[in-house]
Amino acid sequence: MLSAWLIFLAMIFDALDGFAARILNAASMHGLQMDSLSDMVTFGLAPATIAAIMTHSLHPPTFWLNTAVYLLCAIYVGCAALRLATYNVHALLEKKSSDKFTGLPSPGAAAGICSVVIVWSKFETRLQPLAMWLPVYAAMLGLLMVSPIPYPHFAKWLLSVRRNPRRFA
Image (tube, rainbow, N blue to C red):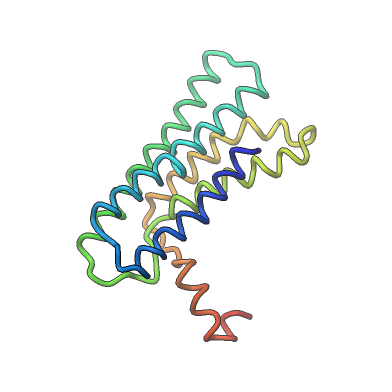
């Protein structure tokens, strides 16, 4: 649960570092690459590790369970890497920023996994059978990261809400 909360804290700092770089006019290609690398560890590798450890701690590991868990978590990690690489390529090619993302952003996918872990920690006994499905959920979130589905840019939407009361409602 502590790891999940730390990932949520990292989401706040991830938003703040980009905001600070734009405000201070310190955005660079090096910064973009370093941000994606840290996102890969924080929102790609860490949630997959949490899912694998939680599943193994609640269910006795067998060869087939280990294989399935590692395969499903590897799908999540691979999709996170592909999502971040694709985002970097689009950032290099497009001069203006968009109001939409193509594919679920990696912090959103990590939030999905971490939310389940936090809820599970509050209701341990009743949700223990669901821990077996956490790697499946992670793999599905991974596939959503590389899907062509458009997602709104939450930060831009949030900033535009103040000027649009109807949208806020």
